[in-house]
Image (cartoon, rainbow, N blue to C red):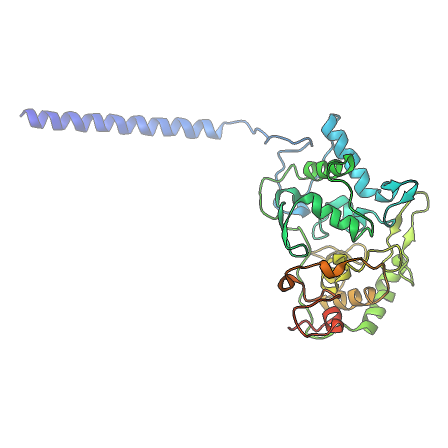
Length: 326
């Protein structure tokens, strides 16, 4: 009898415990459903509750009036009006391009090498130097190559401003992985060498009105720099820049050119982007010194890198224009 009473007592306690558990869960779920929408912490911009997973969904922010916001605002000026800065002894360091000539819309356009979300993926491995590279080092690579200039001090106000700008426009990103829309679009590479005559025809029909017959671009009338940048010649990117490789240039062109094109509504086919990129890069441009030191591990050298040394016996001509079926 005592054993039976004890068993019933245990069963009763178990039932009470189960009822209490159900009650606690119900209260928690009710409270969760009624919770206020608390925005995630902001790093300085507004609309910090608008978390995005694709660069195309970027929402412009307003920088605060605090020290960090003012530094980010200065960084935005450096990005959009680069030609007005970076002088030494009254002489311009590098060319008259602006960072936004390649990183479109101040680095916020999808598949135009955007800055949005970029600081989350650095440091990262860069094959050109065969090492893990900081964001500061990557920015200096642009100064040395795309801007045909020289590196700036990593602890300078200008570098800190650029880094702060990148962080501020990335305040809606919570992932530490690459964001959709970063880098460039993928294209189907034709299984042939680039057709420069076809590229010239495309350039004449689609590009010449903005970039000029001689690729010299159009200068801003009431400001420095270019409304439309030069694509070759002495004031363009040098031959060590990523855009000097036709596959990189073709991927940029596909999603962004002619003016008005987007990644989801391109105006050129993959083959057209391929051919016109080759035509643009067939012209003379500034020469980057010490390019032979690039890619210490030649196995990491891209197929379309147009300067030696190479890890194979394939000609420089084919490395530049294809076919890239090797």
